[in-house]
Image (cartoon, rainbow, N blue to C red):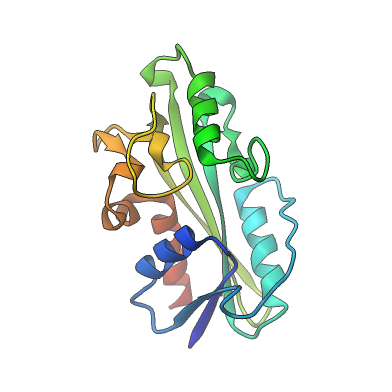
Length: 194
């Protein structure tokens, strides 16, 4: 195993992935770095389905192991919205500042104990023999009242972690990777790859 292709073009995600999988004996490349271009239609209804769709789509172009993730935010009070639509919530090109403000507004007047939420990450590994393995990691927290923190990306500035007394965007990258949904899922898939 000398190369692993990760089915993403998200630079923030690739940084986290390389930090978490850095001790593996493999070069970790994004699709773009591997020269793979394909349009992937994420039409699954679960994080696991979408991760499998992406991994299998990219695996057609390589003999390497392909990893793909699908992740998002589930807000319990909002019937687990935005869920699998987290990246496309309010439209493909809507900034996270607008998405975050919308979620805070929709929870206006909702008390702390009902603001529970979680980040979910499913990671699929597509192997050269055609088999696919999928794992899931979660990080529990709640939706804060305002954006706080400059680290992380996406919904991190509004995702409050009561046991740390801060948002996930206020944690260092190293701290976040230890407890994050993506960190947990990537460590679980790493065990499958060994």
